[in-house]
Amino acid sequence: MTAGPVAAPPVTTGAALAPADTSEAALRRLTSALAANAERYDRTGEFPWGSIQAVHDAGILTLGIGPQYGGRDLSLTEAARVMQALGRGDPSVALLTAMTLFQHLAQAKAPRWPDALYRRVVRDSQNGPVLMNAVRAEPEWGAPARGGLPATKVSRTADGWRLNGHKNYGTGSEGLAYHLVWAVTDEAATGNGEPLVGHVIVPGDSPGIEVIRTWDHLGLRASSTHDVVYTDVEVPAENFPGVPVSQAGRDAAGYLGIGISLMGLAAWPREDRRRTPRVASKSRRRAATVTMRQISVAWRSTMSRATLSPWSATANSSGTSRCRSA
Image 1 (cartoon, rainbow, N blue to C red):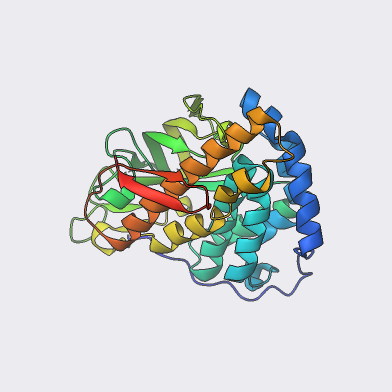
Image 2 (tube, rainbow, N blue to C red; image 1 turned 60 degrees about the vertical axis):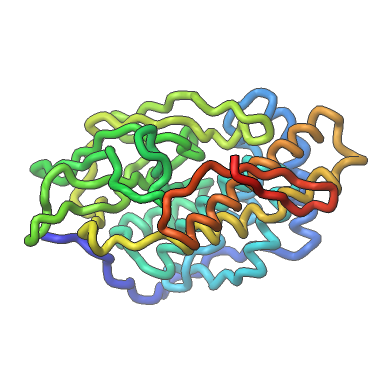
């Protein structure tokens, strides 16, 4: 039986989520709070739980939760302002937050989570940080945008699915409450013989998850973008809303969302040069360069189905980027 998108749930009749203060003054305070610890987290590479807690306390981590779950609509302008403010404080925290917000936005637009599980996510998000991210890239083939099917497999069990695979660049790996793991069935699971492909929703505390600390990039060390290995990870049947391969669309909206969420990071070297210690300033310049490269690749991936050659980018003195083929 083919699993597809779940029906949109009815509008929530309970209390709405506490509103986040996204005024300019509130965002400036949050930027300062994140900046106070950014250099320490980047030097040590430890997960930035203190700063993530600050983002949660400000109500930012529940932005993007749809009105049907007690949240509110999030405009593109407001999202950009928020992400720019976080990025000016700590790039790693901005990236972790962006990934979580995008999952909420995606669920609000096209629900695919089991309804009871997502409502639990919403409830838990009121009490503490609940981080989520799609874990997709692999050693064998890179990012899904470049085409092909993942080597990560899900196989049927008596009670659901069993997941096995190795992922690269799993941003948030050590702190994710939920991994959304891009995988394909190891057998034809549809009437016409097609495999299913999609994201397996894996709770972060599931047995069989191993984080391999491979990430050590100046300026984004605390983003925890490590490799993740999944070995015989069991999930319920409803946690894999896969679709036939021929029906799987491209995640253009996802690339755009990531680019927008990180668009403010390249401004750091100019804005913070006078008040940032020299080492931290170098760290931020490096983070801006990495970010602009990510945006460039994301944009090109959205615009074309062709396999891309590697891209690199540098930020010039005016704060814009120059992209070139590597």
